[in-house]
Image (cartoon, rainbow over all chains, first blue to last red; front, side, top):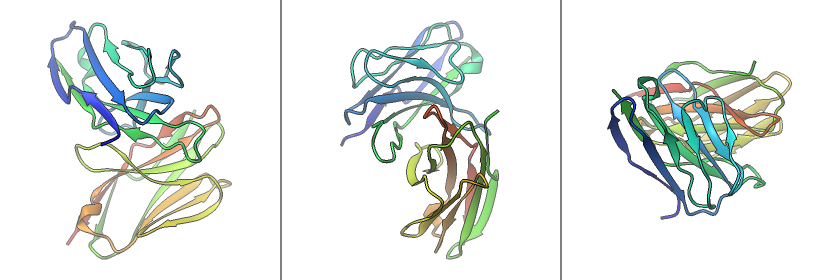
Length: 114
Length: 109
């Protein structure tokens, strides 16, 4: 089934540890995004990539890094996790230039930092 | 600053009609989206408005007034499976999406 795959689906992590959330899409979308979703807040953009080889900072980029070596993969790394990074993380992709350019989301990665 | 406002929670009865409002103040406008998100799941795309007026898609309709910075999502013939959060998002002049916090819709029998 075409779509976006995220891994892991859930993780408990000690503060200070390094963590990479993986995201792979098979829709050949040029744009990819990482959001975090916290209770009572809208989705907040962490980082994005409009095309392979380029990345940009979103609304809440501090403490996170991304890379986009190819079209399909867009991993998100927490270099040294802190409790405030406890959240649900969604990866998404879109075909920029399409009529609507709606986002397609992965199933999410629930991260708890202790 | 940029802002999207929508009610936090609404309750409606199975079989009835409900309207979820969204008002926005953004730097530019390049379309408004509605997404549905069931608890513990990913958001899924419902509708897109870029011109003023009503877009109808089955039981769901979405309306836009750009001059008023206002949209609504109309759900007809409510079913229990419509219990979910409904997210309003606006694409700004930089083609970035600004998201509302979502409206949790509770459907009662």
